[in-house]
Image (cartoon, rainbow, N blue to C red):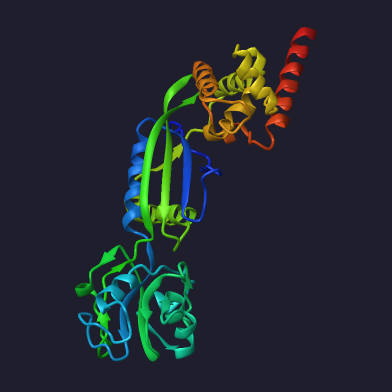
Length: 370
């Protein structure tokens, strides 16, 4: 049986700040949430992002002729302790597909590297060995192939074995359980977590006449083994899986009310504000001219622009920016707003405003005829 609940305000989609988005950093904006839900969702996602995601890491290393890590190697500048520390910085990427047993095993990859006298003579008597030189036949993508491992100063030819596995969090060397450990294998601490930093903040946002709803801004920094978008998606799916058992039993299934008809008035009120022209909100001449020079004619075009982009406009300074932010605040608006709930994006803003103005004009004409 179904039990009907009142409508919850929640985001229809998550927007990404394109100005800051990259392979290792992205800022996500989700709105609106019911008051309090911004912190609930933000803190939960942060904890799962930092501790629950999986990625590959090197578990152990074996270099031919090196029995343990507390020794110097003839012909290599760094001692083995430093070599192991350098290997801990290796970043490998692999997203196992369904049926891929790589996730459940630690596999050893063997490479033989050789340094000749000719190479040393051509490089002032030394050659830097990088990660790409010792991991040439794996099915992992090397995110930082130029990672320095050690420096060779005499001709040599050695075999290197690297054991790689996939896991979660940080695992100390003594906690690795290896049933097939080989002779002279040096076990390492492994940092599997691909997320380096997560921060979030919650701001007020407007829904209709109410301004106490939550806007969640989530910033994710990864090390390149996964992208911020992948990290957010994976953590959300992990959270959903953990909540599923709580939905069972004999409880009623909840059905939430749809948007009430009265909310159309709020929609029209917001659209009316967005349709205002810049010269209708009493800005200073300087600010008006700056916006005009940037071909910004309406409030909707203005609020879709992130704050940092405003300062890129010609002759536009912080004084003008503060004036505009104050004026938008009076209207219950702000820079960088997500207007997707009104069907508005930066690409179609003019088209949507024209449609609204035409529909409002048609309604007025009909009222006059009646």
